[in-house]
Length: 413
Ligand code: MCU
Image (cartoon, rainbow, N blue to C red; front, top):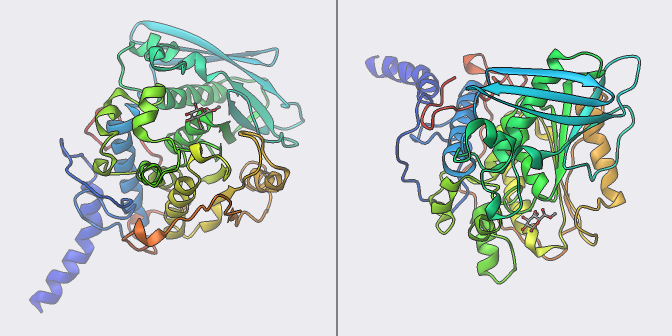
C-alpha cells in the first residue's frame, strides 16, 4: 500500500517538479552529446510528459540559445511609440536614457478591414500573396552584418551598448518585437497584428528563424534557404564537412560575420558540447506555423544538415499533435533565394492557413533528394517522441509565450 501511495505521489509530482525545475539553469553545463539533443528531456534529466512541461522546456531551450549562441534578448524597453504616415511606420524606442528611431515601409495594406502582413527582413524573396501586406524591415539598420568589423554597430547597440552580448540575429528579433509593439498602438496602417508572418532568405532566413522562435506574436515563419546557422544543425554540418562536402560550419561562420553572440566563439570547435542544436529552434516555434524552404543544389547551405535537422525538429510538432503546422520543402536546380515555381504552392498553403485563416493542406514535408541528401536518422537521434498529455492545464493552442530571458541564468518569467 505504501509503495502504491509513493508511486502515485511520484507520478503526480514529476510534472510539477519538471515545471518548477525550469526556474534556473545551472551555472555550468557539462552536456557533451554527439547526437541531436532530445526536445523532451530537461537538462536535469527529467522527462517532458505534459504540454505544460513542454512550455517549460521551451523556456529552458530559449535560455540555452541565448546563453551559448545568440546572446540575450532584452525585455520590452521602457518606451515604444509609433507613428504612421505615407506608408511608413516610424518606431521610436527609449531605454535607460537613450532613444533610437527606425522605420519600416508598408505596402499592400489597403482594404475595408485589417489585413494580415508579412515582415520581410531585407525584402522578400517569396511571391507576394493577395490580401497580405508586406512590411519591409531594414534589419541591417538595427544590427549591421558587414563582416566581423560590424560587431556592435546598429541602433540596437546605440540603445544597449556596443558590447551587449546579442549577435545580429537576436538583435533583429528585438527590432521585430518593437515593430509589433508599434503596430499594436498605432492606427491608420490597416494591419491585423494577430496575423503577422515573417520571411527572409539566406542570412536573413537565419534571422527569420530566430525571430519566429523568440517572438511568440509571430503566427508564421517562412524561412528561406537559411542553411547552416538557420535550418542546419551545427553537428550535422560539421559531419558533412568531415565527409568532404564544402558546407558552412560554426567555426567558419563566426569568422565570417556577427550573426551570433561572441559567447558562441568558445563552442564552435566543439559543438557537441552545446546542450542544443538548431532542431530545437523548431521546438521553440511549435505550435505556431513554420515553413522551412531549402535548396539541395548548394553544398554550402548543408542540404543534408537542414533536412536532417528540421525533420528531427518536427518531433516537437508531432508530440503536440499538430504535425501539419510545420512544413519542410527542399528543392534544387535553381539560384540561391530564387524560389522555384514548384514551391510557390507550399508558401501559399502556409500563408492561406496561418495568415488568412483559410483551410489549406499544409502537410508538406518533401525533398527532391538531389545531391544525395542522405541523412540517416538513427545516427543522430537516440530518443523517441512522446504524445504529450494535457496535464497541468497546457494545451497545444494555449502554450504560454516564451518569456524573454533578461538574466543569463533565470528561466522564469
Ligand atoms: C546562407 O546564408 C549566408 C551564408 O551563411 C554565408 O556564408 C554566405 O556568405 O552568404 C549567405 C547569404 O546570406 O547569401 C545572401
